Length: 272
Image (cartoon, rainbow, N blue to C red; front, side, top):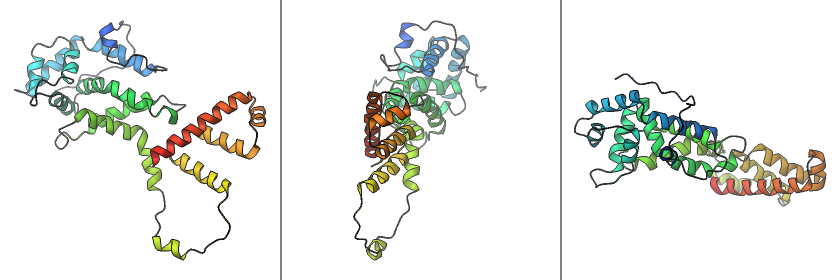
């Protein structure tokens, strides 16, 4: 079946109140990407071309609950809502969602419906990593990762907990892969080598510990801006002097210092 191309260019159609409820209300610093996705979905859900494409899926899954749903389809929102319904053990959200994920291998529209289903959870998970992406919208990182997760999902082996699995894959792709890479780059040493290493009487200094913490924080994804500020504070020894050097107020430096410390603590907790 020919895949229907879908544009992500903003459309002038005004989204209906129902369409906007699919994204959590009160998202701080709402990203432009979310606005575009909302506008796109508001147009796409009742598009004649999209509905024709969706109805054609019935011939690819005869007898499937999805085919029954497509028979009288008038709004793609009906499909999205079906992925959240659990009428019985036989007809769960996994049944519909898994069929859509399988269709998404060759049909972008099916993948877009799956993405719309996952979007609230993706936003919620992205918020947790906001502190590691100060200069990048975390939603703009997790949405493309979700597309990759949908296209690469193994529908033969992973037939249960589909939504949770896709979200986990997207979070790993968008945020946690970097932490794993840092861990993989650590040099493994034979435990015996510690017993044969020459002992030094000089104790580990606070500066040594500080350098180690910053190195681990960098591997865990803490922004360079935070680490540079902490280094400067230790080197200079005075927030007031740092504020003068950075042409900001001492209060701003203290606020940034506290935020940087929180980022380091959170990052090392995640990496552990």
